[in-house]
Length: 191
Ligand SMILES: C[S@@+](CC[C@H](N)C(=O)[O-])C[C@H]1O[C@@H](n2cnc3c(N)ncnc32)[C@H](O)[C@@H]1O
Image (cartoon, rainbow, N blue to C red):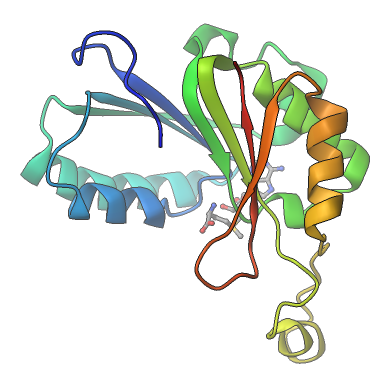
């Protein structure tokens, strides 16, 4: 649960890293009946087409339900820049929530550590960083690998936790499960 900061007019600031089509945000905004605070969302992705597609989908629901309550910004960049430049997001201020799904499954552990560290540094006090990674028990793994040639770097919960601890020893760590049980998230809270 992400807590609103101060008065409910203070925006909650959210960063989605490797946002892709932003399906989870479209669903959240479609399903929510109210928002605890205005939202400022930054979508970060190297693929301009994915950002344009995400915007077309988000604009529909924002225009219909959340005019003036939800603002979306776009950052069309590669995480390679963020790995070199920890200040890449400095101009965007601090975030209450940063999340990434479908990216760490392609990163070597050392890259994952640096990226986690740089993202954790962008959290506001009380903010949460959530990063997902598929576990080796993924039941569709063999289809993905043998029929689709889709190779991921699978990680156990212990390996995911190890990246979190190396990147942000001061962060409060928890492993969160989603309903399928194959894509756990590390959650690092900045106290
Ligand atoms: C598997 S999709 C995941 C999309 C979304 N997060 C989801 O869970 O559905 C991976 C996304 O990561 C983006 N991506 C891959 N490498 C990246 C990089 N180096 N920098 C920024 N974005 C990257 C791709 O453009 C793509 O949109």
